[in-house]
Amino acid sequence: MKNFVILAVMIAIAVPAYAAVGKHAELDGVWILLGTNIEKPQLTPEGEKKRAAYDYQKDDPDFQCKPASVTRVMHTPSPPIQVRQHQDYVEVNYEFMDVRRRVPLKKGLAAKDAPYASPRYPHLGKSAAQYDGETLVIETVGQRAGVLDTLGVPGLYQSDQMRTVEKFNPNGDRMQVSVTHYDPVYFIQPFTVTYNYVRLPGGKIEKWDCKPEEATFERFAK
Amino acid sequence: MYRKVAVAAIIAGSLFLSCGMGLAHHSVAANFDGSKAMDVTGKVKAIEIRNPHSQITLEVPNPQGGVKEFYVEWSDKNALLRRSVPVNKIKVGDTVTINVSPSKRLPNLGYFRTATLPDGTILRDCGFAAFREGIVKGRSGCEENAR
Image (cartoon, rainbow over all chains, first blue to last red; front, side):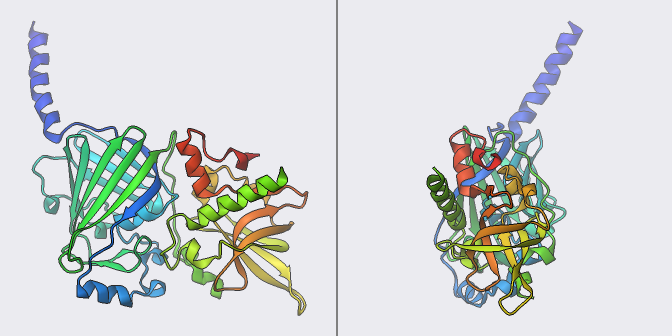
């Protein structure tokens, strides 16, 4: 009887705590990109100016093996991404550039109060996650000003005021991830990129181990 | 049969070269002409299977005498392994013929399509688009690469 009471108390404590972070959706796994839908960005004059001045040979962080942004990382088609949900945090791991994000799942936690999601790449900002029904929502702030995209829409820039909202929607062996960028400096309207994925059975995230001297096409011009 | 396989390989290669990367200045599609193909025969000086792009260095005869280097760009290491491309069949010192899509900017650079090995074997890579299509259809990816 005593054990039953203890168990009942434990369940009474655990269930609301689990419910507070939300329901874990069917997102766990390794996913490869099927395709993207990129809205036409509505840029401010400053955004247009920056894009016009963008010179990939000098400005593309890829050549220094540095991921410009999560948006840019997800544009690379062949390296998969991985989602692993835990009780109080979610991991989103990207093979490209070895980006590993650990995002806290804590009700009421603001992104600005969260730790840097990727200690190796703090310029990717601070993120907090929660569930909205089956949708995993990650909000990110504190991203460093610089190049936002070099592949989907080359020459997009972001300011340090940018806020992004990522929504991970599961659908069996398919997953859709939308990333909406709110940046008053460079975007007149929120700019959304939608990525469609298919589950990679038995897939693993391998090491990328990028080296700058091997990353640029310019090495052929020597 | 051979013709069908060759056509399929070219289509797969073209799909790969155009898969969602057309806008980037440093992307494969922007740097290589996927609509063209050319054979380059030479001795393998180096093969570096790595990320973000693999590279084969060939020594090809120079019309002015001696040899010059020709670079063959290829997919990232992880993708090649995932697609079961038997890259270890290309060996340093072997004379091979590699069919490439030529670079739009550099005369000594091309993107891998197929390689004809010394014993006549043709090494193929189905490319990412075909791999992805295989996954969608419930296959393991590019079975033909492993043959």
